[in-house]
Image (cartoon, rainbow, N blue to C red; front, side, top):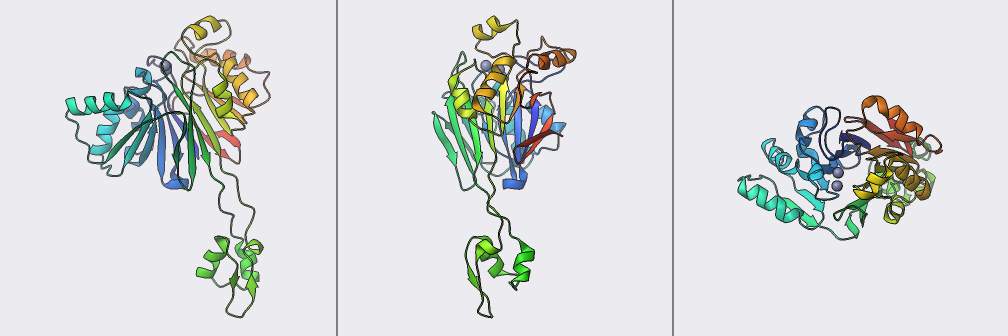
Length: 312
Ligand SMILES: [Zn+2]
Ligand SMILES: [Zn+2]
């Protein structure tokens, strides 16, 4: 999986940062992308990437502040113009359905694909054979969710050389062995699945939080995750503003990550008060923590393989 930040700013767009949006690229895993939040002009940001709107399968909205949703109507319309025909599902807090439906109706935006809008409560909000998505309420000035995406255990790899050694012919018998079944070869020999497959692989655990103060639910969601994406609107010295406006400092983000035992932390939702030259100083404030911490910029892309995160 890869993580692509389309917008990493807080509140309003600035020259450096657009408002919140992020893409979880699952092209290898399921041939689609998931989006988290969709601030104004997200579709303009997408134009500067290789992401195709018709490949966006799900959009998870953390909360209904404009810097997280004002890009939705335009993106949904363009997805239709650009040939999107497959179902799009949007998950978000109560109110998202009314707002979006009224906007689409009054602007006479006729989508050529089915749109499902699910107003969520805390708990498991999506599950299929590959993924589980769990939501919990955070502490902001309006209801705001954090999401935990868990990829289920992956089927073990087929050790093709071992299978060749044991004389398994290419074709359906190999598929059965890969799926965990033992088989009998045409010569009568029995080959066990465990002889020709590796260890099952753990999937990834990614946690994407919306705007929030430091809170317990953030820690619960982020427990032993591979990657935690946490807002850091403020810094040491502006803690008071963070508390007052329902936000976190970058030290709050690092503390949540440490308590949760998350392997990697990416901080987003950065205030326009911080200029590009300030980022190094911000990272100094969290230099004591013994796990990798990144501050994301727009268009930063990360890949995560076996819990190891890299900025591409
Ligand atoms: Zn925000
Ligand atoms: Zn907000």
